[in-house]
Amino acid sequence: METYYDILDVPPDAAVDEIRAAYRRLAKQYHPDVNSDPDASERFIAIQQAYETLIDPDARARYDLALQSGNTSGPHDPFQWYRPGGQTSWAPGFSWQGQVPRSGMGRVGVIALLFVGGILIVLMLMLSLIFRVAAGSRRRQDS
Image (cartoon, rainbow, N blue to C red; front, side, top):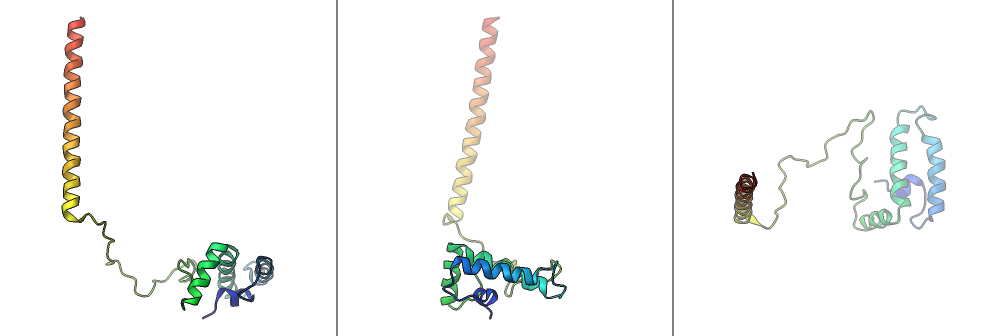
């Protein structure tokens, strides 16, 4: 698998200026407006992604850590499943049946929260009614 360093043709210890120079050189070469090769746009996207990851110190540190653990693509690789023409393909193992993260409250906690919320709403309605009655009796006394 080709790493971002391979895409930009820079060593892993390259400075920011080297990465920027390599990006500019490759962007001029593979930009879709300049290069009519059908694979140029896909290569240009890979170059942009590599540059954006390696130029940001935090993203680069995360990427280097992912490389050390054997994962060559970054943790959030937006162009990993990109196809020319703007189409995306499904990620392997994708399912709409995924597990929903648990909140830790459980069913009893959710029921209790809904019950307390309902009681608060009823109390607010009762207070509103009491204030309206009190305000109505004051108006009658003033007249």
